[in-house]
Length: 453
Image (cartoon, rainbow, N blue to C red; front, side):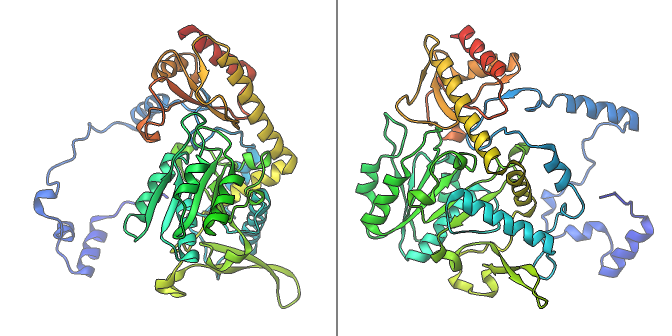
């Protein structure tokens, strides 16, 4: 938006209209001690040319994945994005800061969201999908809220191997509710959810069991076993937290017995972009359709019998159910959902599977190369993994990362990072491999590890 300067006369007219003498009078609600009375401590004014040069120098200090080969993951991944996605989503028909409501939504936007729902339902093997949520973490929370409402039970069992930021968001959102949060421990040897521990924790008041696969270590969890316990032991809701790229290769959450499937849509054509905005994916079985959060786009025909689309359901509960609300989400992540729709449409089923296969095979190639080095080993050698794996190094992960930066690499994420809840020791490194990584880049990383081992 262009900046428009106010004249002194315009400012005086505005103040007179609202009945105050000065701009300072607008801030009387703020204690005087908290107000800035002097000038801002800013450098002297520069000419436009000088300012451009200074900003260019600052911008030159930024280094992104277009300059460094990225092996970082832990929930956000550096995938290839076809250029046509940026081109189409930047068109004026789509690019807007405002999410339209029913009366304003064009048929084109509604159709795009309808196609998105269809694609996510097929990808997850579930009956229905909504038109998206804010991000993966909030999608998990919405799934838990649905389970609590649907079952009218008060215990929530969450796998410790779920991404830490998801678990933190869940605990925050449940903190003021009469709900018990219970962590399902992981096996120390395998790094995966302990099914026997789950069986001992579940009871008749358990509303849901939440398990992510691949988990925070990239390991493929046994959804079928976990969800069988959920259904047979307590008739509770099984919530699968999935990676959409992995869905193209691994057994779908619906086929594993999930009642609700949620995930982060960032791998579907959305850049890393400093952590957001991202895209929440939400799919469920048909019996939960009227309790599902967010928007649901339906297909119908108009008065002339032409195919058309409409906003069939939305849980804008403040004007529908009030205190009986399943959710207060009344919108969707429209632009990000559109990117995901275009990404999946561009690649198709075959292309998406190829991306998944490249991620899988390249990760296993790199893991084999690394574990052949003296002093390096997989932290969880017995577990099957998708495109992310944890390595125990002979030196600290911080040293590995510093050495990699010198060679133009981002080697991974240290598992001792507080953001990962200290899921590993100082020498444990979480490495992610996507289809973007070349054999030369992977071999360069191996050379870095060999040099500092």
